[in-house]
Image (cartoon, rainbow, N blue to C red; front, side):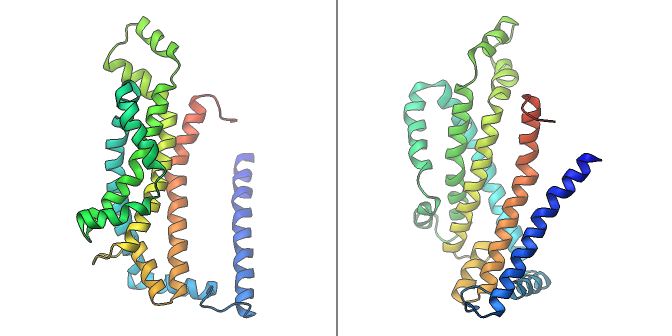
Length: 261
């Protein structure tokens, strides 16, 4: 009972704060403190989102963007995690690939867009490349640090009990490095999401995603569309965190004895 009440109280306050913010926003717009071109009213944004749902515009754009994101992120996982393990076990790879990853992680994702357009043209491959570049480096670095920071006593204890080779990797090293890998996966997802938005804004193709809707709203001076798509992007980011990564983080805290419950 107490847990249910705590959950309800934790959900009520953010909703109440959001409603107050929307009410203040609407009042400021009606008072004509600023032009609707600068910031539209919440009602016009809600009207755009509803009309777009009826037309199927932004739901289709959401599906298109998520399809690109999931594909690029999956390739990033398949590339970044093995490379991170390789860098953790090989000093040569650590001094070459690992050092390159540190430098490229600091490079803003939008910087990959001109290169992707020149290499691949205005197509899906350019967007996929940008998402991959935004994902793989953080995964590589987090996996490398997770494997290298495993206490040596874990591996020695496993070998004492007869574990060796692939068995040690599957049952000792990777589970011990998993918290760091999950952190890299969460960071990689955020970078991939931002990278895809930048790619969709600059790469114009027939199949529109959320970034292209944002771009067209800016070109048409339709601020209701711009703000509405921005809200959709924020909500998708929050849902991804709450659905995909928060359960894993709670499970890891409980498994490692860090949870308060």
